[in-house]
Image 1 (cartoon, helix red, strand yellow):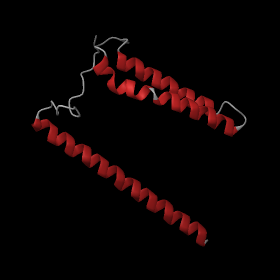
Image 2 (cartoon, one colour):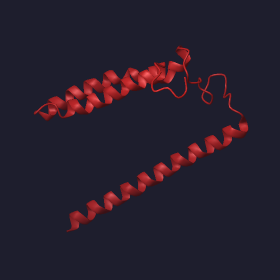
Image 3 (cartoon, rainbow, N blue to C red):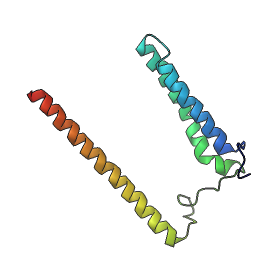
Image 4 (cartoon, rainbow, N blue to C red):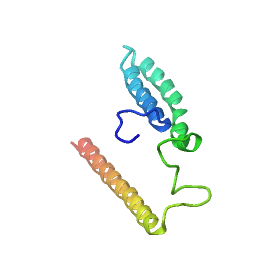
Length: 120
């Protein structure tokens, strides 16, 4: 199945549906002259799209697909070798810390910018 243009795999198909919902959300935001009406209808579509998220997550467990099932976050423990699991978790933690650092730096810059505008 590798090297083919498209396979009707459960995870791929549910992700395609999510892409269509995402594009539809932005289309609905700008489809109406009344912005409030567009926001409301886009919000309804977003709530409908939330139903697709668990389907994407557990599609590899529910159906026989190309993708392997979860190997890190499992009820009976991870199946990944510890020599790979530790660096994976360490780098995931490092990415999270980096994200929060950059987010806090951006918030600080925005607050300083707002303070400068109020003083001027």
